[in-house]
Image (cartoon, rainbow, N blue to C red; front, top):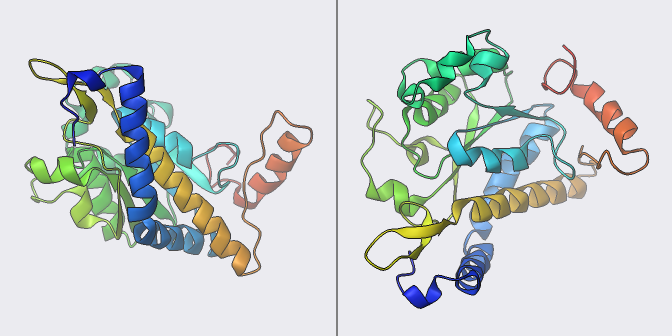
Length: 257
């Protein structure tokens, strides 16, 4: 819920209000986090790769899932830029302001990623209604993958579906992590209308890190060591990461095919 008091529009107001939301979801999201962790642990246990996708600022949360210190090694970051980076399209294609709404884009991104059976799709979108987001979720499900969504239920319930199917990301996912962001994402209401200071990145990062922590706990309980990255800036980190990456050579984009 957006905070409307102008007294709250300050550094302290944002910190106080956002921390209250984080405290709340740390408790309220426990069941969903556990279910999300089961999807992640099952994927890792079966030798799968976590394929994380988002557009716009949701890519900040995707970065928390894929390829970072303390995170899981079998992860890929998918983005619309893959059309250029891996698909050979001219960079000017990314200038299209309606690219996220074009039919067929998600299927092409999926093909470029070349996922295998057992891979898990983590799809991040605050609104959960952009065409490419919904199309990716539908395509992943059609191909037999499980889908974990990180989205704002407040926002997605307040806006109409834009995909021809009439469905939204939250309608398709096996598990939904609600980032608790208000409609429009900005948290602090401004006098005369509008709001400032987005929330979804903070809460989205917390939710995915909680899920990764719980997945690691589940793997450890089963006697399995989670394959996680060590910072390359500590002694032996770079070399140890290379050894772990060899298990997934050709399947994660940080390794040579």
